[in-house]
Image (cartoon, rainbow, N blue to C red; front, side, top):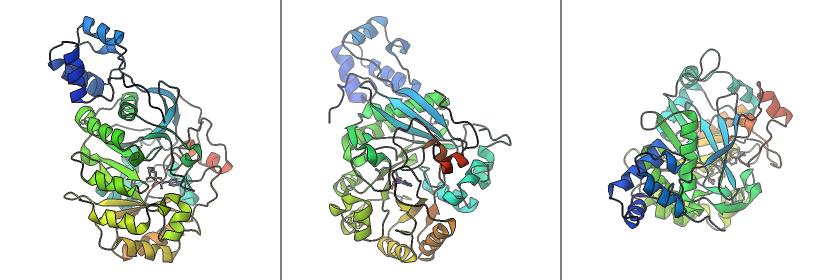
Length: 419
Ligand code: SAH
């Protein structure tokens, strides 16, 4: 996998900027000025960095240095307020980034509130009731997120940005559309952070004043692009100003990297895609289970050095008649017994080429109740932006939306790209 040459300011950390400034024989404080301009102000060109002398900017440009801002190529808006961005990079590759206003039942980085919210509002509607997600019927969260006209009121809530870590994905989960792309390349740290900068700018919001949650749950497996992902996490905290506790990374279960991740000084919270209750089933759904099976996965999860008031989130995609039976729920409860964790249940988001079906609401609730009965906090994640292919497992750079009758039914307003 080839990666573009790093000549972008976006992606450089304090030390690298200090070295750049030193080499140009500029005073040391210029590094902080660049840091501020790129990550806080989120400039898109050297010309916009007005704190730097013109001559220095010209020298940078002559040396092939640019800001390296990500470009929004297309933008699709869902009737539920979710926005899916197609974001392009210098080499013509693109990824998807999703904006979810006012958080989400389980995708919010600060899961305690997200969980409580999902519980209180009865959120988490599987496909059969997905049409309901078009109306502001989500208890407290929904009712202040949407005005009577169905418009977003303020950017004051807890919005969530879902970012990608790779172009495509190599993990081959059988229920995920991203898998169909294969993996094209890793994103650089600058490209990961660039998605966030582009979306914040487009939405007109700015952390820390605006509460922004961030999830590494878009395209790709973050732990197969570990170094860049970690560097991006640090830049998001130190540069962009996103609170560490509001970031969550999800992994399909790259066991050795989960261990490394526990050692990091600055790191998001951990989510693990479990998706099956025994090895046979998990290997069928997620072939990587052959390499890192449930015993290895649960061992590393049990050893994971959790911080105060931190827990591990386990995601479980429910596939009708496949992994959603009562016995599966009991096996999951057994696997997770004694772990400081919670479970986010996701009813399958459908897509072309995906052979599985979405279970009924009753099945989802029954599964949730078994886990809760066993003392495991379990929440149902409300699908977001299914009509524009923005929901979990639907990211494959689709440029046409709402082609299937089911998705069209959910889409009650025109879905033409905006950008
Ligand atoms: N590669 C990482 C990051 C992606 S997170 C990981 O696997 O964790 C995306 C989440 O969506 C994962 O928990 C995944 O299991 C889930 N998912 C994938 N396809 C889905 C689908 N079709 N419907 C619902 N959830 C899905």
